[in-house]
Image 1: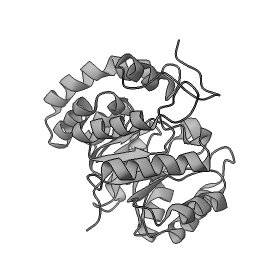
Image 2: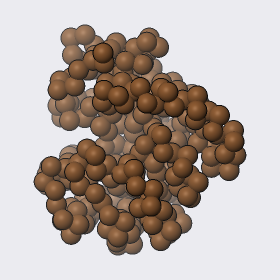
Image 3: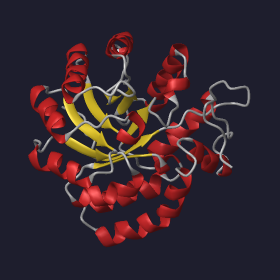
Image 4: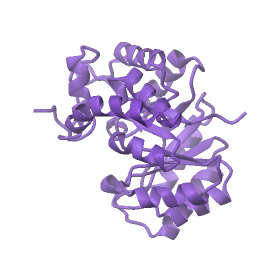
Length: 278
């Protein structure tokens, strides 16, 4: 039975100790807290997890921690993206045997490939794995937009490309995908502030950053939105909105780590080139 990615996923932070090493006990507590908070799935090694600053050994350490603590309770999605297609495939090949349910693969950044280049990048990845793949479109970070036509082409050509995390901020582009994709293709908001508007267009949920700090509230909000109880969902949304605006003011995960340190869930440690929130 295929895994479901409808509802709330959380792009989980990677907590560090003051000496810069990964704080495994804190990570274990966060994973447990998120599952108990009702999230539908977990996302490890995303941008929020500072994956680009982790060594390969550290990435494996993070994945193994998720697998151990999660214990198959919710689907586990792991970030596997980049602007070197062969390097992405190498990482997937090295971790394919682990108990991971899906890959979240960001559009190739910096290189600025054409739509055909983006398509072929994902073709190579899709052919390299039997696991599900969720595309990740975030042009403000990558300078590369996966256009609706390219998304639909990939969705139609590959059974294991099962959804997209959409953080372009372009709701009309999202609507085009929702309108023309098969019903079982997940269109997931990658932007906390735009999650409810996307649900109103027929979207399937949210991969959240603020959910690290408030998993119960975010999970409740998204479920209410999916149940078309917009009024109740909006009450939670407006309670969360000031926090959402603050945590992204000086970059991600700078803000969410500052908030979670105030909650005494982690030490407020972040790796360069990011710095602590002011």
